[in-house]
Every structure is written in structure tokens, then in C-alpha cells.
Length: 198
Image 1 (tube, rainbow, N blue to C red):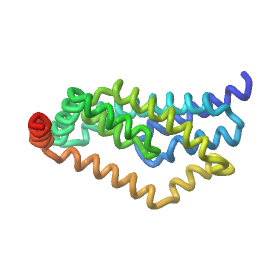
Image 2: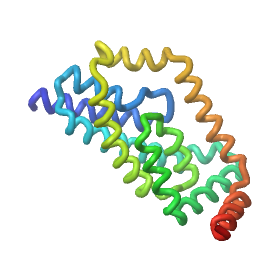
Image 3: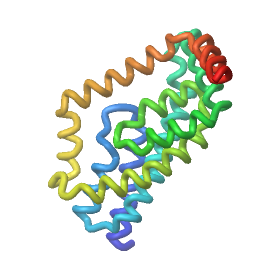
């Protein structure tokens, strides 16, 4: 097999693995930018691979969250998350713009997909919106970024060595826990009444 295609396969495998792992992974676009600069990969195929396998990885993460992570929540927290999921699945006029807006931002999406899995949100809708946003955001960031690091290890080491980034990851997990403690049923009913009145 041509070495050029092997590099795309390696890139796809790394992106998939990074997006399945729930925490402490560097932004996917940094790895894409590294491969494009280091191995002279074509930008469009790299972006397409990045968006496709990032979406697949995040969808797997959501499925894992739904099946396994929910077990670590109390009964009340599971019920609160299900309330959020039912609301988002039936109010897509609010859900779609929120997801698309988030997908365009170069910030970690792991917490969103973990929460989506816990809430049993429609993953097809979430995945499509995420994929669409990542196609554009990855193309932008790869185009705006030149040589980031001499090797892939430096990207991961600089990420783990940044205490601010690690702190934000931990804060994200705390927020996921706290969201499950909120009585969403009452809040969302009030939101519907307010929207109906306006």
C-alpha cells in the first residue's frame, strides 16, 4: 500500500481514538494541522477524515456514556438527564442552532457528547450538526495554522503540561455532575410557558 495512503489511515485511527477517549485529549484540529504540515497531506481529505472520524468517535463516546456512565449517577440524576433529553429531542428548533453553533467552535466537545449520552439525546441529529460544523472549523484552523510542533508527541505533551487546560477538563466533569442535580422538569415547563406567552 502506498505510504501516502497509510498516513491517512494512521490519521483516521488517531482521530477516532482521541474522540472516543472522554477526557485529556488535545484538540483534533492540532493533530490534523500537524499531519498536513509534516507529511504534506492534502487539506481537503485531511479535513474530511478529521470530521468523519471525530464524529464517529464522539458518537461512540455518547453510546458508551448512555450504556455505562449512567450507572454512576443517582436515580434522580438519571431522571433529570432524561428530562433534558426528551425536551431537546422534541424541541429541535432550539436544539439544532445550539448544536451547530457549538460545533463551529474549536473547544472540546467531549462533555457535550457525554451529556448527550446521559440524556439519550438523538445522536443522529447531534452527529450531523457536529460533522457539518467541524468540516468548516477544521478547514479554517488548518489553513490558519502553520508548523505547530516538530512531532506528534510534543502536541500531547504540551496539552498535558498545560494546567489550565487540565483544570478546564476537570471543571467540565464537575459541570456534567451538577447538571444531573438540577430539577429540569420544572425549569423546562416554565421555559415552555414563557415561550408560549411570547
